[in-house]
Length: 417
Image (cartoon, rainbow, N blue to C red; front, top):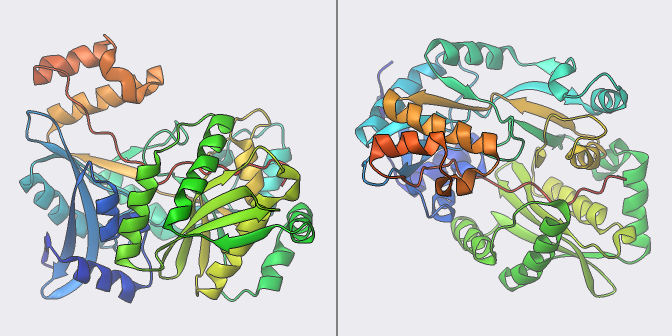
């Protein structure tokens, strides 16, 4: 097998994804426009004249050094279950090295382990269990296990997201399988409280509609309210406007905005993203007022049924953390999601391949120090050992490239659901 990696057009990139059926929306050409602070490039893998994979690579430069981190969030788009898939990674390393990358980061989209609803509920109720990885999975993919070993053997370094939602893409996600299901079957698979809340929302007159670009401002106001309540830093309105414009320019149905209102009051709002047969609940918000009308449940049910109608096989509620203890700060999020009757899935996570070991070592020292202090994005203002080491290497303190978030943690965390 003689593989070459080369730039491809957005049309070729999207054509491959369409033929495949789906891929992460973080691997579409449009996502490069959303992440405008990174340089973006569509790449294709060719075996002779046959296109066998694609990827969106994002480059973030180190100031004055002329070297960059090459990052493929939830990518590249390859057949990760193939025993020969790692043979495609060498040409990728060679290509990005030629583009000046000091390190390469990838995120294989192959599910390694799965936990069903009953297993998760049992673990939450068990005082001796504090993390999902302590629970025996209901299924393990041998291809993913093999790939994990192959990557380690080839010198790739796993980047475990111990910081929860702090950096990179989530290793643990929650998904609701839709294939061969009817709305009635999906509803019956939900727990009793979810079914009751959906019924209550309908009874009290919660109305869920699709919004337009002009409605992003209303969504954003509710999103900031959620951020303040749940203690995370919200993105500016301009980010969502850019995301809307870029994704809809690529596909008019790539992103949707949903709004749930009760007697004219906005009580919940969410964004919905689709690539082929995979739909994601990407951002969510809910009001502090009128929580008893169950707008969060109503809006989720509408998005689930719309995903089913659109032909999706998976409704993806995105990231969860491993924590299952009663005092875990994110326990409400997994409790909300487990009520849908879906499953927790663990991907292989993100992996780094150093190209320039000195620069990569400085980069890792910076990130490790930043995470230890809990102030990753303000570290450059602190006189820490990590910063001094980077200064010695680069002559001054650069703005180090942090992996971009694909989506923020979702805001609807109704623990009673």
